Length: 417
Ligand code: AMP
Ligand code: MG
Image 1 (cartoon, rainbow, N blue to C red):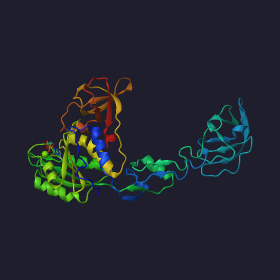
Image 2: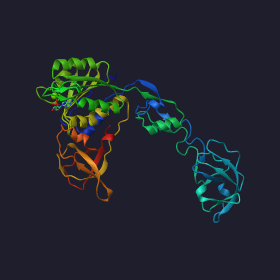
Image 3: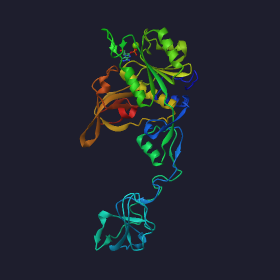
Image 4: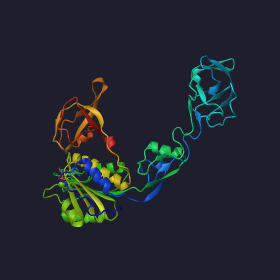
């Protein structure tokens, strides 16, 4: 379990920017230490625990990049085509029979090792055969169509850094090095509760004034995508005492406790009091919309995050507070979200000094330029606004107004988790 000090999340300012939130989390949260060894087939999405340097060059030997004819560049005339006798044939996986004779060509195939002495390959499409000889055009550069050993990655080069969240291409690189296993940090364990008397679980019978709990399933799905081991701790009633005991008993064995709902200042918002009775708590008032205060705390050394109940606020604050916390706890390098420039097809007014996220769909506008079309309604409770859109337009703190045609930054949902 990651142990954090009680004042880990304390923050001085009245309003916190999103960037401040991420930097506080990255600086103060310590990563889990345990390391496990996993096979390459189980490595995708795991966090690399140790740097990997290239144990061999890639490619491991100099080889042909095309199907064609290998020659010594010194034998080539500058201006006229030349006919070379073909002596030898080398295919992928075979070793060359011997050095290429001066003035001769060797038939060669993609991936086959270059015969000794040969340094240039003519593509088969560029030559013709004439009476058993291959006719080579003039003007090919020495070294053409050859992949020198180590041109991709030289031996000893640091190829994958600890903290990397492994992607399929990273797994491919480990395989190309001949590794069968990699050392990764253990998955972090996260418990998720929903809070609210109005909530029932899907499958249970729903009273007239109740709704099915949706946030818990959204949050669990996002945590799984981030590589967490998730414990579903169900729905807690709006009651300080039962909330406090549930939080306390979850704290001992987990790396993070996440709740949704009950963190505003209403009389029936009991999460803050409950956390204070068993641990310490600070409210992060973040300059972000949608999103209300996010509760951050420590219960018995375990970090706690309380997200707002409205689904869209819950989603957006997850991305900006839970995601960096999970990455830090998991030992992953922080992955900064880089919005993609698109053209706004909407107008929008916003407050200065607050970051806002607008739910949008992308479409191809004039000249094929990508345009962001705003979802017509804005409520933070509208699940359809997340389901029926492609992503979020991020409007920075300094912006007060958006006009159609202006360039704005787009974050696709897939890039957020
Ligand atoms: P709260 O943050 O508890 O004040 O809740 C704000 C709004 O979000 C209320 O309308 C709640 O009914 C709704 N809400 C809270 N938790 C959930 C949840 N787990 N799933 C769906 N809606 C929720
Ligand atoms: Mg509530």
